[in-house]
Length: 124
Image (cartoon, rainbow, N blue to C red):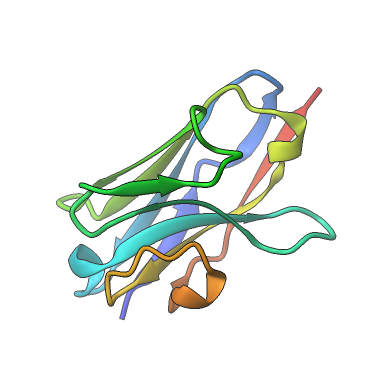
């Protein structure tokens, strides 16, 4: 099993930056792909970015390309999402999710384990 805890959310002005962290426990973390999703009020949960088990491969949603960077440190059991040039429409609850089979799907159904989420608010 993998347990995930997100941190780093908060209030930021449009144009600003924020770093989210996903701390993992569980013996399958180092073989798991880890993704970030987000969900804004009244909207579905959408894919943001994913990183494979060793950090060699990343994929981003179009909305995140060029502004967000996903990275991981398996020794620290950490996956970060660096967000820059934030926009009002980036505001959402951000969730990290893990697939112990190592798949890097952009579909919510591809992930078995989920954190509780961290709120990101962007003011104009």
